[in-house]
Length: 148
Image (cartoon, rainbow, N blue to C red; front, side):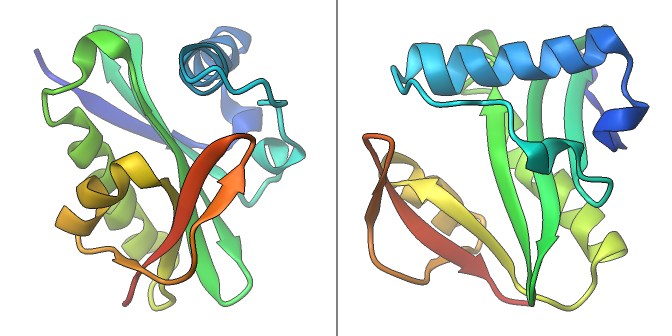
């Protein structure tokens, strides 16, 4: 199965594409992880925010979100549909996102807030812990950085 990637601002997505993006993120971050927080954020609609979508046969199977944040670039909302986990798609989404960041925002470090259970995954991709663990809506996270 061929996966292709699309990068766009929220305002350039169709109503169906926005629905699919929020459904995937809500299914994972709110329902599956039992973390009742507001998934719809103003940051998503900011014209400077880019959404990376992984698609197979026109179906959304994964996503990530990127935006400039002061002196760094933030990578987050990395999600893979349940039936595509364990295939390497998550790492591919991160690598595709980093390649896009290198083209759009060359130079500054890339930061993310990893769930502690995923820390090793990000370390394999070159990220290092850059701060103390903290609680975010009942889930322990750790800040991580990939230096330029």
